[in-house]
Length: 127
Image 1 (spheres, one colour):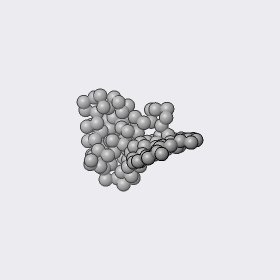
Image 2 (cartoon, helix red, strand yellow):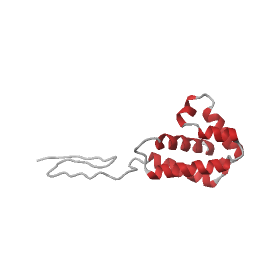
Image 3 (tube, one colour):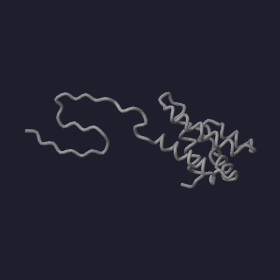
Image 4 (cartoon, helix red, strand yellow):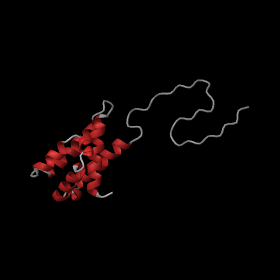
């Protein structure tokens, strides 16, 4: 994935996650921070700013949506801006986190053979 593809992926993922009621404040804040940094970088390009303001789903539905934004980001040098790249990485890490929210409390009285967590392996021998 190129740097500009990383930025576009983060913007799309942030927009998609940001519209859900379950999106964490951290995701919403990270998305807003990335958008602000990109807007500053694209300040002189009204077409690119309009593309950035389009809803993520609309951009995916239009055949030229992501390509126009990608070209504008490359032309503006956003793919070489360390602030934008780090903000994009941080946002993708938050969106892709399997357990972004608080962990549930599990109460198991007299339970046998129970596993909690991801990727566990267990062998049970009950007597």
